[in-house]
Image (cartoon, rainbow, N blue to C red; front, top):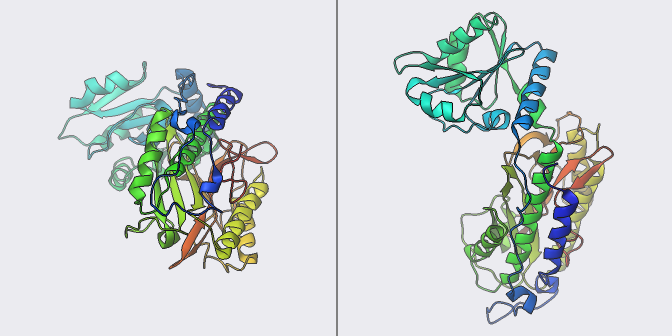
Length: 431
């Protein structure tokens, strides 16, 4: 692993302990009616947050080569002769090459038995040669030429002119059309079985990056929640959360919603300032070495009502049920169902009436990626898969509650990435 998980969690725990978190400022206490920030302890004023990226080692050339070898194995298993990957996340995943997207196709043809061959606009050749891995051939097309015929020529030279050409699923529509039109007689098919087959199961290094990213976001939220005060705007809260992320060495943040606006799962356009008794829902994240976190916490400014408590507890139990249900061999839909049943049994059903979205999504280099925890998805979970676990109950006109952590499937179950799971209404960040 690139970083000792035990080491960064130990260091993180020391930082967490020094933050002086007082959960009673979020629930079970009276809001500051004067609108002033709550008093700070000496531990809080000492700005205990510190850069958390010390010791993180980036992926190596060997890591990328292992990814290409796994892709080739999956290609062989699925009788795929070549795979075309254009600019985008899949290209970064397999090669570390980041290329801006334009109307000019750029990408790589991966063969099962030979080194990759790249296509590039001719005027970009020197730039391409700066970032394409050493030993890979780059072929170019002039502005008046057809880049898709260049791909067809590569297939012919690789002995795959009439074989099966798989396309990375993040290609844009005009690229798919161009390849289908110009690469006959090759059979052009969906390459998701390769790209998702590789990216869906994370390595120890990838999981370590995500552990750290998720822990940083939780620590940043906890720091930001200290600034809650009557009359503040969502921006007044998102600022301290972003600053806390930055203090720990990353760019990240969270989008707050207050009171009735929290019933909008992805936020309302109507700006509401914080009032006594409001729910405070924050959803956001950061990335470490390109691997993302996605965290939601819902707390209360002042004393929550009995209904607040009942709904919040139903959501907490739903998240715990999903974590318990997630294990190797379990289907994605069964994990969704485990959480949904708890919410329905609590009186907030049926189906999507109040729990209005799927339970979760895959996460890694992208905030939302394969696989998805949703009804109808019979895909079986495997160790190393990483997904969000985010049940919610949304009552328009009143409030919404969502609790979200990312989790990784282990050999015998699943665990929360980054630790610090919700413990209770008064303890939104455990250890």
